[in-house]
Length: 184
Image (cartoon, rainbow, N blue to C red; front, side, top):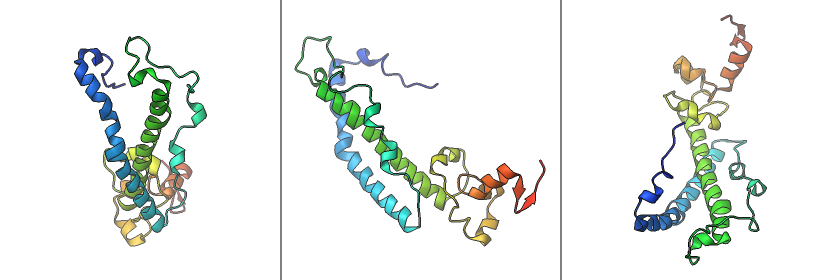
């Protein structure tokens, strides 16, 4: 597994850099998240207006509150330093970060990516080396698959891809193409 190295380098950073880094966590709340939320609303409207149904809701990406290990009563906080005036010493700080900010932010970005995958699979069912990663946003048929003449012009790998053509899954599982049984 590829890992990002942070823990091995944290205490090698000057103290001023570590303190400066903490507020940088919260700048996305002010700058990015409102725009991502607006983008999510617009993309959902787009998908609804082109006929999208059975789109997962945002809540499907948010972890259940009960699944979090810690509650306010047993939330761990920092206790190995003699400066208890810092936020890291307070349970409320960690509850906010670990039960609200982090999971909701990750859920928002995952949801936005999911919606964009649906848009991509609907409008652009053309394979590339990362397209398999778009499977969570699979659609029944792409824009190109609902038009028979254009569908016929698609490359076979694009025409018969299960991510944007539900008939390709049927062909694959039943061994049939256009009602004719095939042999491999």
